[in-house]
Length: 133
View 1 (cartoon, rainbow, N blue to C red):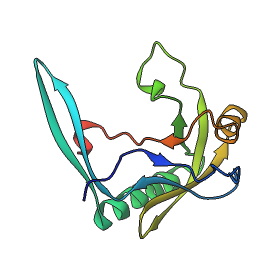
View 2 (cartoon, rainbow, N blue to C red; view 1 turned 90 degrees about the horizontal axis):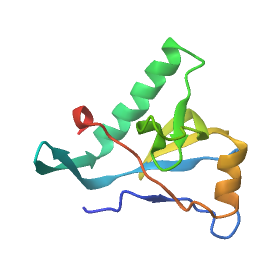
View 3 (cartoon, helix red, strand yellow; view 1 turned 180 degrees about the horizontal axis):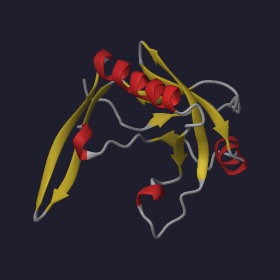
View 4 (cartoon, helix red, strand yellow; view 1 turned 90 degrees about the vertical axis):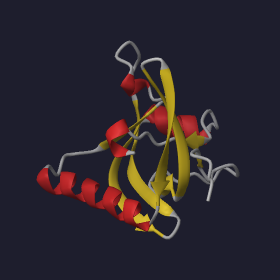
């Protein structure tokens, strides 16, 4: 099953609820290209029931070890580039496994909430590091 890696917020009608749940990671198979030296390699990130369970369990373990832990949702993946702002759109406080993927609930920053409500952003895009694919 090929699925777009972008997860749409379901707020096109203006019904975004910052206190509500949103889909963070959909189930599917996602080709991910990475440059390794002079070669571009394509990996397949598979998000199935097992992966969803592991993602949610890893988050729960981090929260159990440190109740103050929050997972960053940033803008444009800038937190991976030290020359850019890593401003938070949302701090995820809870994850839930559902039939269609991983759902999240969090604390939205003023900029993050405004970006969704004002339709500046329409999609979420999860990131996996090479060791995770």
